Amino acid sequence: MHEQFFDNVMLMVPMVASLDPSSSWASVEPAAWDDADPTVRETVVGMGLDACIRADDAVNASELEDPAITWLAARFLCEEHREVADEFLSNDATTSPTHTMADLFELALVQDDATATDLLDANTICVGALALAWEVHAGFTPEATCWLIRVQSVEETGGDAEYLSLFDNAGDVENAATDARFGELAEASGAKPNALSELLEGVE
Image 1 (tube, one colour):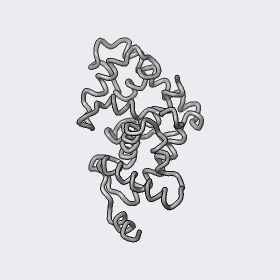
Image 2 (cartoon, helix red, strand yellow):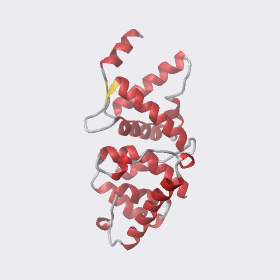
Image 3 (cartoon, helix red, strand yellow):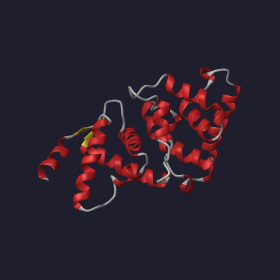
Image 4 (tube, one colour):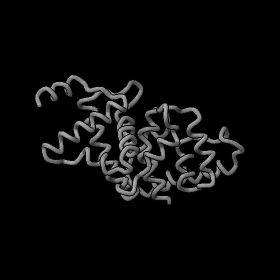
């Protein structure tokens, strides 16, 4: 479970860093378990185990620290704390009128049809696409917007295959369809096409 915990922390880093730029998460360079330095693995897993210990000692959610790490630790390392971790994560954060943060974090976990390496690679391409032709919602980063794009895709399709397919090199017909789908998900995540995007659309 240590590897699953680590990989899911790496995928959550951009969202947490976007919500709190002063967070220590902002300095983490995401890398999958297989590619990460052993020291980084040990440090991140240690953070999760420490969160489990704090949860053991806490009387209620108000005594916990770092909601994201606490939730992921409870999800993979100490499941007996899931209920209080859900409450702690969702208490102060509302990014959706229909979902708690715990709901969104559950959707953002690595799905059965993908690996963390696949997703981190796709995220890099997604961030580049947004930086080139989109303006993200005020207060959000391109990285966090890609996180939301993927969460929406997972909710609608039940897996990561669609998100990964958005960044595959395909034929012209497939690319047109995936470009349209990417645009739909980006706009639903608060992004708007910039002048370059509109220019490129006019050329097509």
